[in-house]
Each structure stands twice: as C-alpha cells, then as structure tokens.
Image: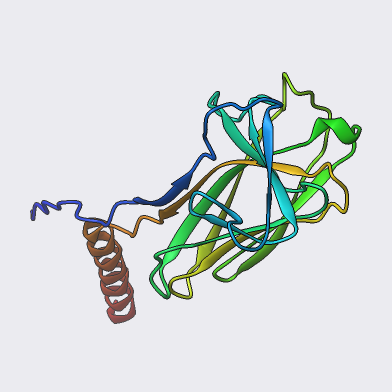
Length: 198
C-alpha cells in the first residue's frame, strides 16, 4: 500500500485593489466632482460627465462614510487603473444601490474590465436611511494593466450608487489538487487497460 502525502501549495487569492470612497462628512452630505482637470476621487478619475461623492447624505454599504452617486447632474463615468497580469483570472466585487431621491425606479450601471463588459441593475425600493445595498460579483480575465470603468446608464441626476469596490486575484488550483487529478486519470487508464486484456 502506498501512502501519498500531499502539501497544498496553491496560489492564494489576494486583494490587488480596494476602494470604499470614504471621507469626512460635509455640509449637505455630498460633493459633485466633474470630469476634466482635478476630476479625481482618490484612485479614481471622472472621465466623463460628473458624479456625486456622498459623504453623509445616505447610508453607505458597510457603515462607513462614503459612496458615489454615479449620476451627478447627469450620467458619469468613473475609471481607475489596475495592476493586473495578462491572462490571469480576477474577481471583482462591488456594492450597488440607487439614489432614492428620483423615485422608486431601477438604476443601472455598466462595468468594463478585462474581458467583461456587463450591466447591473438595482431594482429600487430604498431610502436614505436604508439603501438596500446589494453586493455584485463578476469574474474576469485580465488583458494586463486593465482599466476598471463604471458608467451610469441613467440619464438623470438620480443614478446608481456605488460603494466598496474590490478586485482580487482568483486562487489557482493547489499543486496537491493537480497531482490528485493526474493520479485519478492514471488509475482510470490502468483499469481500462486491464479490462481490455481480460
């Protein structure tokens, strides 16, 4: 009887980017940030339109002070650069809600990163005190040093709300798992050959 001792030496998932849009609350509870010179919010750049940096106006996703309304006076586009490796798999997660001031309708945001170009819709039914944040996740394969871009698809001043954006490298199979898969295939092949001989 052969005893196989296998150590797990797989690459672990690791966070490569995280942004919660936090900041000190301000009078009125928000600041509008426009595209153009100075149109930045931490690691983010407003590349088109404008967004509202929410700081106290409504409940944030994780109980901290910041989030973003992706439509300031109209639809905005927010982008940042990621230190990704071409061909590697990553996981993106973010919290989505909607500005409750424009009525109880849905709010839609588009996400572009790596091989992903996808829209997400928050159904509505929220208030400033209870935003109903939903965590969205998407897996993508990087092109290498990707841009992560969020675009409001609401042509109003009441857009999708965005909070706590995180990008992690996806865990790779452990060397132990790969060895076991190889052994299982080898055993199956040996059994087939034995049956063929019999």
